[in-house]
Image (cartoon, rainbow, N blue to C red):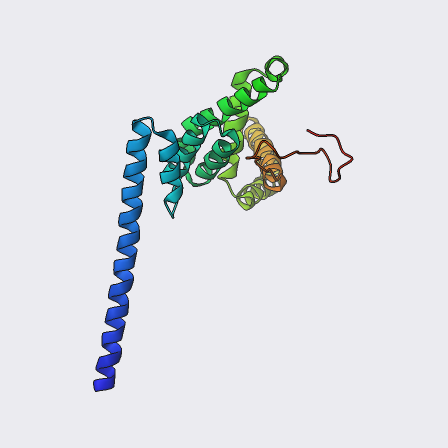
Length: 219
């Protein structure tokens, strides 16, 4: 009985210590977050950036704020990096300010490289923003969902097309074909997003080549 009591006591002590450590981590995170927010409001961007970085578990809000700090400090690579991390954790309807920041960052980078005029002539800003929003939306949809939906629509058309045609449901048939085509296009775009790997350069000293060896042209 005494040994059982000792075991139970050890378990209680372990649970108590674990609970205290978890609470201390949360308290430390909250205090660092408030401290960083105050520093950001006072214009102490460098200090706020370092305070945000010290937070162990970074939420979408923290990564978003890190991106804002990095952008104001002229660290555009880090700004894009943190904003992309925030994008992964934000729900789609909460991403619009974030996507606007990413678009502005890309425009400023292109302008600095002398590419803004060519891009503006080729693609108006409205379509560039729409493209970023669509790609961000596609990331929230699992590819398997679009594949199953596409197969279901075509199976339904294959099984009931003759029946609908006999009933002269031409509007419904046309609508089903349009929806199937849209889902198919979204599926192809989603596949492209999933296989396309991107990297973010955070150091200006890094040289990027157009191919896998030193003989390729610098980008």
